[in-house]
Length: 602
Image (cartoon, rainbow, N blue to C red; front, side, top):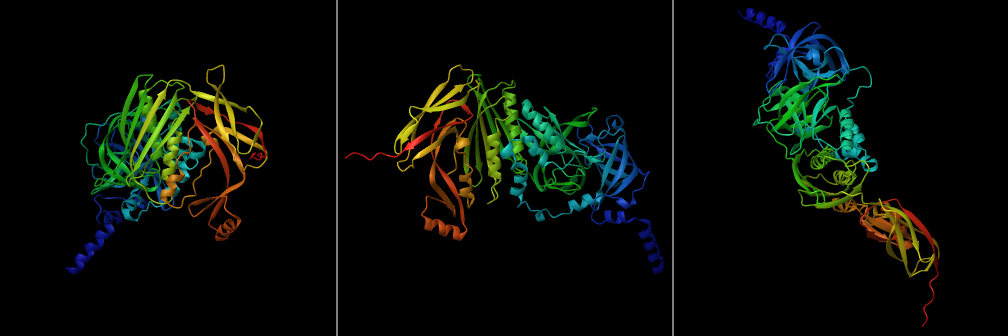
């Protein structure tokens, strides 16, 4: 009898494949391993084509690509049914679970995840489920976000120099643009608010490089759902922004175990630990186009949190909800009779926060003032941290491409805040006020003049700054009094005239902690601040240990150099500034002679 039991036990071990043993070791679904998949096998997939409920489509295995990625192969399938012969693979189907066998008892083999650009046949690549389950098994506590300043700097640091939003988005992408005829990760449709033309162009160009298909003007309101429990094949909505304006991407859930889930079958942004809200989403229509077919969706309530973003999948949980960042935008114009307020909540992810803020500001302005004219924009950003720190940044812009560059300085201020290397920060709120003045209030700096070209040290030189406001035939003159220090050396000096951004030099020490860092990133002025400056020959400032030491004695300088804690020396300038009603363009200079100071008569 015992021998007979052992006989049937051995038979059962041979009969049932190892995939079944894996399925029964804690998994809630039967799976088929990559090595067991054979050409010609048939099965089905699940995805949402209308509403909320997953629907079945047909698949047939046509081959495999071993080691397409390190330790990860790819299964090739032909898909059919639900109009896929007409539309081809659809953006938003990433993560659709694929089963081998008859419905509803097939074995889960992986997720629909890759496609070929401009392919004539509906062929797709499948990420093996074993690789995705490895991601699900990761301990989220082992995933550190301590390198966020480095990641933010790599993506957004160049933006501080070039202001190129599309280039920043491209640096954020996962390389989804095909460089050959090979497969690429299926794109994710991203609902966008209507944006100004220039900003819309930047978003569409940049998002396509991030592996997303931007859909303007969709998903303006939330669905009526109270929040459904996610199921395999159900829609997986990932929110960047929710509220009066929405930015929401849509993919598909592959597998659910308890409150945890995996989806996509490819990276989202490939950034490891994440904190994006997962939202319920309803599919309204499959839009088939010659360029790309995509799901049209509405965003619903927050129902979970995306916690991980890896090579083979994204990972989330339905047990948590991320705390989002409130954003209030007010767009007003007394002359145009406009005063509108918009309230949104943003994903707190540092890497994407500047991008989402740009969408929130741009969408609000486009909604309030849909016509594009060369207005003057005064944009004020108020930010607050949960630890009590706060600040206000004011910028002026007057640009030929309306609404595109109005937010560069406030986005730059947020980027600098996120780049701080001293401590992790939690943003409590963001508030933006956009004042629109329907007038091209710019002025070109033409020249600078004075009644004399020679002045004594210790005297005050009155300068006339000649400006030409836009649309005016005659120049206007702004007067500035420049005090020449009594100890100024004799000789010819150059007097520079320009804007605060061009000429003001920070008088703050190199930061040594978070407090001094916040001081160092505060703006020195705006484009309406007219600045005049002269150098102080021989006068330098040493920077050491968070302190500034103007014109230190030689012995002190030598001691600082020996200690190797000195920064500098920095040149020192004598400056004077004046705020004018125009956004200033250009700069100029003049030369004057400094004569020796005459001795006073007693």
